[in-house]
Structure formats: C-alpha cells, structure tokens
Image (cartoon, rainbow, N blue to C red; front, side, top):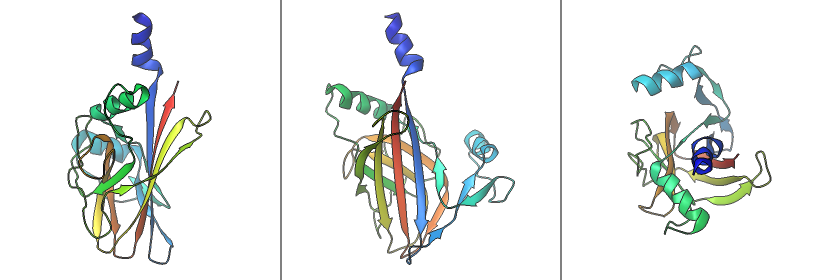
Length: 192
C-alpha cells in the first residue's frame, strides 16, 4: 500500500501544455501576447488580468501555456488506461469566450463558441516524443473563422457535444477576425 501511495502522490504525473498560433487570411503569423510569471501569478491570485505592457509580458509568434487537467479528466485518463470505465478517447478541442479561472472541478467550458468557424472540432491525434519515445499524446485543430471572437478559453473533450472535459485553461484574449485561422495544439505527457 505504501508503494501505491508513493506512486500516485509524487512520481507519476500528467504534464500538459497547450499552444496557440494565429494566422491572418494570407497565412501570415499574427503575434500573440504572452504573460510573464508575475502577470500569471497575479491573475491566478486575484482573477484580474493586468494590462498588456512590457512589464507583464511580450508579444510572440505563439502563445504557450500550461493547462489544467480536471478531476473528470483524471478519472477519464485512468479509465482509458485499463478500460475500467466507459470514457471515449479525448479527441475533440473546443474554444470559448469564458473568463472564469480554470478549476479542477470544471466539467464544461464556460462559454463555448458554437458558430462562425469556432465550433468544437475533431483533432488530428498522434503520439509524439518529449522525453521518452511516444510519451506524449498530442491533439491538434486549426479553426478557420468566418466571424470575430475574443478567444479566452480552450479545452479537450471526448465527444462532439457534451462529453467529459479532460482539461481546460483560460488565458489573455486572442482576438480573431473573419478569415483568421487559429491552430490549437494540446499535449499530455505521461512521465516518471
């Protein structure tokens, strides 16, 4: 029993990352604002997003953030490992405009986009290598917009509607316009 507690408590964790790349209608990358550690800490602590200025971040070709695996996501991942539950594979990416901080208790996106090219989409799924061969599950979707949105949240689910939310995160607004495309890449690494 001691070994199991030690294994669950500290040595094996799901590591996760999400990346956003925004392009205009001609395929040219549009820089995205990346908060620094001070701004992320302040937002997490207070729920307030600091102004976009050089003291709190910078513009980059891609927005990279750590995301949050939900309680339902951990249960779903455990089910997928040994088949003891009924969860389907987590192969859908959704985006939204919700701004409430991500929580491990989340079961849905706060305000999922359902129109104008921002609808939940089936991902291109693969295994990639981070530290060990094929230790990372990767889901990728490129959304092409016919409307404008301030995208502020994203999540990975296991169904084209409803479903179990594996992970969710909230971030500074990515303003998309008609003709823009937003590539969203989620990675989940199993490590020891």
